[in-house]
Length: 625
Figure 1 (cartoon, one colour):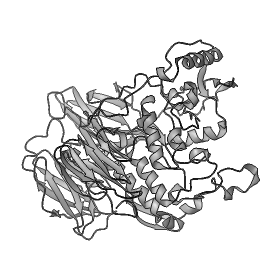
Figure 2 (tube, one colour):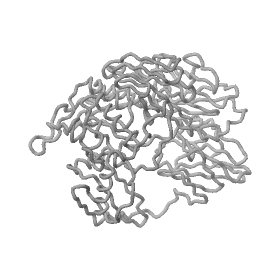
Figure 3 (cartoon, rainbow, N blue to C red):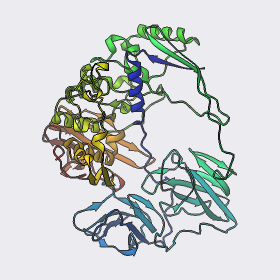
Figure 4 (cartoon, rainbow, N blue to C red):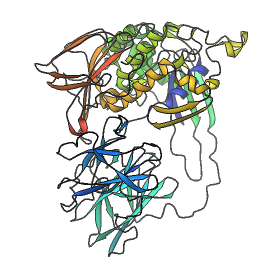
């Protein structure tokens, strides 16, 4: 039997709906690195032929602005590219012995494709850049890749599962035993069947190789830095498991026509303290892999611990049980309640997982993590004012196993801030301020549908059968999305028709689009730990994220609405992602003037290379300016 203990909810159906909606928002960022043991390409490969896809750009001219590894950038706008074949332009450049280059593309009139501020990391040989995706090939038939059907004494046929990573383009970067690595990003793999990519490579006299996989745009699967050991013959790699001598996963087999059984013997019991849910698992002739459960802890309070009761507080459920309880579910619930109440709030576990150590990021300790993250009820309750929500969030963060994963929101399908029965109606400036905080502070920012246009602001969220649904906060929103949209890259709308064009023109929509682009370009804003040490300012903090395997080191100083002074920070050059302003810090001190209500500043430390500060991201809008 499976058993899950839930906090007793006053509105179980609504809570379940909220949990389902939030579940789809929880995703972990992929690693973004080259495999650590990769060896540079042979010194004879000193040129790169870069092919750039033009069909989705329609520029009048194309230039390649680049810098060989450890070399200087070309003069803006770079070198002109020439027509190669339909929908492609190209340029061959001399790298002078370098093993790669950083590149951007421009129309020469101020429009750039710089990979959302991160530049493109390209290798040698024939390279394609198509709609932000990098691969090794000649789209015009030049064919610089190895023979796709090698005929040497030893051949490795590799099948790679993309079901989990979701890549549309996959490259195989490999090194035969005793040989050298292919040039980054490797050789392109082809679609074999749904969920699988394949590539056969010649190992010459070797019988094994080391391999890693990437999507051609900086996202890698390198087996946590160890790379994959792949022998000759047919091998599958799925979810970091290597199966040598495997069967062809794309070979025709007996179709699975028998559906799993439904879970049976489902029952629930409540005793005023908890709800115990039990069921008999589903069965299937080919197996049922796993269940996923997400819980909402409905603690509508303004204090750190829900009226002093640890068992009724959201953060309590992010920690593993601290002792063994009865095998009987009902007894176990009472035993846990009694034990933890006797321990009290002062004896609950604490964590530094969300916090920097000075200016330094440290590896989080999730050894006592329960497996469940929660929505941030305390910040939600206090979002009548962004500064109040921020202060309350900070106050609770040491009691969560890792507040980095808290889901942060203002209002929902049930309640507005402070358990209001109406959708949030604080005004456009306040919404902009809320969003600026949510997108740059710790946690996962979440918007209730329509908030980006203040849809049904001030309307009663739910009045049951006493009023039409169309008059409530749960009214149908689809009419505002009718029409067509064309977007060339993340957060950038090229054109729109119909009602959605009006929706996209709203100031808060523009605001959240740019916030998304800034957050995407600065890893510290996504996964970074934070600190307010040495900082004065109402909503001001520093964040950092480092990952040795990927070579990522991102450090950012943030202030929302008000001014801030930062002391004890690393010296160096900082660039603001909102305005592009550059400040050189010496003596560990930086003062930032107040940007204004709803506006913010994100000064990113320029560490060069893959950790270069992106500079200004996007164009000025009604709030980010």
